[in-house]
Length: 271
Image (cartoon, rainbow, N blue to C red; front, side, top):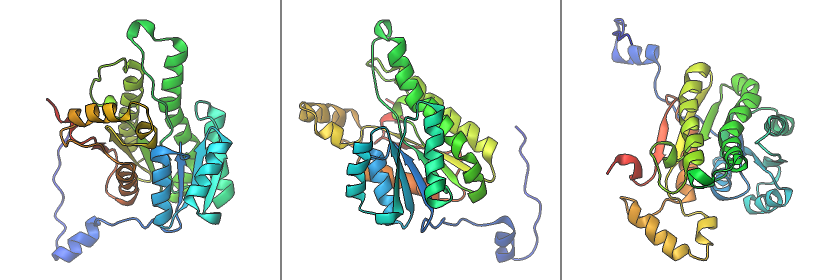
């Protein structure tokens, strides 16, 4: 890797700043934001925040009934569109991009949040479970990006991918497929940040333990939350709202690309 110094720009400090460019926050008002897996959990929280920031939002999910419930929660009127699609298929990914462009004529931000979690001991991992985990997470991420890329390039847009602490460090408990898929998303983010620069930025969120409705609704929620809290250096779980803010920050911060935001309460900091 070559290290070079900046050429002398001359002039005043103000002149140099103007020539080099300066940090700016991208206004999300009236931007078109696509959120896959947007009918519940982290995706729904992100969709809500983007709406609050003035964006128009397209949410995708597999089931139409889930989307209908999410629309009621979001209460965004004609600023919300939905698409029922399966992002484990290329056609499903193309449907997401197609609906967004048909509804709003553009895609400014793509948040590839869709994915499933699953575990199994190495000896018991089936090909069906492996494919389900890898396809919904890594394949769906890549082909949603591919489908949306022409619109993102026209807009000079932003991609926000969803990884996990399990994509950054090993996790006990049969996470081989899930960890592999999320690690793939981490490195895919870095590769695409280089391939798509300077026109399209690509950043990644890697959450740790988040207090989603799914977790809080478990029969053994109190026991699980206690265990996860004790495993987290900050001694609490994250919230969906915090993940949503990270997604918005990734979209808004113009000088950030190829970044992996660890939102995990310190889990991946080390022993």
